[in-house]
Length: 254
Image 1 (cartoon, rainbow, N blue to C red):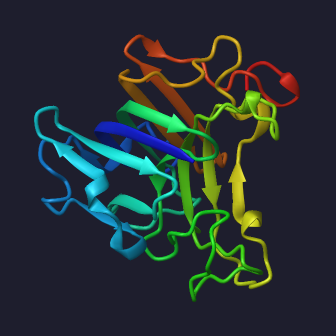
Image 2: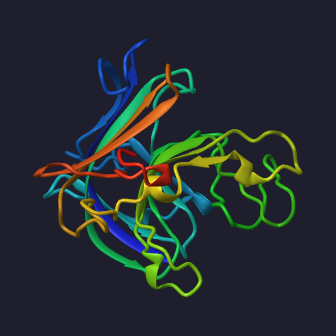
C-alpha cells in the first residue's frame, strides 16, 4: 500500500523533429503552467474507474499548482491532457514535469507515475488486478488491460527490512507496456518492459534515495526513436542528481 500527495507546478510534452532527440528542437504538443484550473477550463480531464475521482485532485490558485493524492487501495484515477495525435515507437517524444512531494506513506508496493497513455487501449486495471475488460482479456483471473502506455515510475518502498524481500529497491525507472497481442492465453506481463534490478535503483552510494518532501524536482523523459532509447533525468534546485549510476553486473555508469 502506498499513499502520496504531490503538487505539480508545470509540465510540457513535445514531439521531436525527425532525427532529433525528443527534448531538442521539439514541437510542443501540450504545455501546462496551472495559471488556471486545467480541469475546470477543459484543458485536462479526469478519467478512471467509474469516471475517476476528481476529489483527489485539488487546484491551488495561490501557487499555480495542482495537488494529486495517490492511494493504491483506491480505484484508478487519471488526469489526462489530450495530445491531438497518436505517438508510436517511430516518433521521438518527451516531457518535462516540475513537482514537489508533500507527504508519503508506504507499507509495500505502489509507485507514482507520470507519462503517456492511449485513450482507447490503456485501461484502468493495474498489473495484478482482477477482471478483464471485454476488449482485452488475459488468461486466468489475473486479467489486466493497461496497455499502450509509457511512463516514469518512482517506487519509494525500501524492502531491505522486509522478511520476504530483503533488498533495497527505491527506484526511478521508465516503464513501457505494449499493445495487447490478441492472444487470450498470453500473459499480460509479457507486454511489460522496464529497467529492473540494479540499474533502476536510486539509493546506491551518491544517489538521492527516497526523494525528499517539500523539495522542488524537475523530471525529464526523452525517447529517441532512432536508437529506441529512453533517457530520464532528475534535478532539484541545486542541479542534476546522480541516478541509476550502477548498471547490470554492478558496472558503473548505468
